[in-house]
Amino acid sequence: MKRSLQEIAEAVEARVLGDGSAEVRGVASIGSASEHDLVFVEEEKYLLRALQCGAGAVIAGEFAVGSSTAGSAGKPLLISRYPKLAFARAARFLQEANRGGHNVGIHATAVVRPPSRLAPGVVVEEYAVIAEDAEIGEGARIGPGCAIGRGVKIGRACEVYPHVTIYPGTTLGDRVIVHAGAVLGSDGFGYVRDPKSRRYEKFPQAGKLLIEDDVEIGANTTIDRGALDETRIGRGTKIDNLVHIGHNCRLGENVVIAAQTGLSGSIVIENDVVLGGQVGIGEHAHIEEGVMLGGQGGVLPNKVLRGKGVAFWGTPAQPVRQYLKQLAALARLGKKR
Image (cartoon, rainbow, N blue to C red):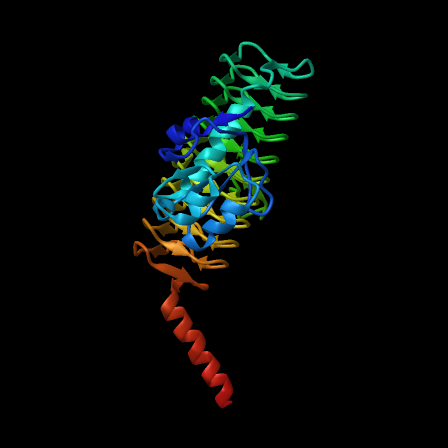
């Protein structure tokens, strides 16, 4: 399904230079674009290449206004202060437009057990199973082979990809995206050892998992529910593939977590924290607002990292400048020996 440039401009808060009635249906890179695609440039030095490619239109910054290069090309432009952000929003707008043409409803092989409540526009695809008392909001899509537990609540316009498992006691807000193979709300890793028999007995894992609006969860990621309370993932947080988040963790808003990161139980991560790949954090640690922790960084249990905008690295994690000085000192000692 195509959309006019004027429609896209209004959706992404850009303005059109040229033919606003021209239509596109997708986005692409400059190297692979066709006449039906939209591309973007963030720097003026790439503008000529974008204008000469096969794309139907270009999203560019204010540098393109009045450019002789743009004027001679005759290709429509969408002007935005933040071209890459506008491009991302345009891609989502076009994707939603294309999705609107798909069939809605429950596939014949899916199982929806009453008294579950499905709002208008919900799609339940092949072999998905929705247990009793589940609630699914308007426009949500449940992919093939998903298992949605009893009493689970899923908000509006959520996208749950194939073979996702959502345990009872889990709530998803609106516009949550869950990629294939993720497991949400499973038991946390909690045991009590009997000093006589030396055997481990399971500690109750009876809490809940709450995922707020606009969260995205990567493929094969696992998030445990609380032991007795709740695990909470804050609004706008983005979690990569193969991440594990233990029970009772509380993540703030707009947190970013890269792949293969592991969080032990009862960790607090405040707003706008960025965690690189393969980060490991011990139980009861506290990462304060705006901290950035580099790849393979490690935080010991009960420790606090603070410093908005400060980058940490290493194990145990410390400010990156301090860490690099220590590495340099070790290198000098090695040469002396």
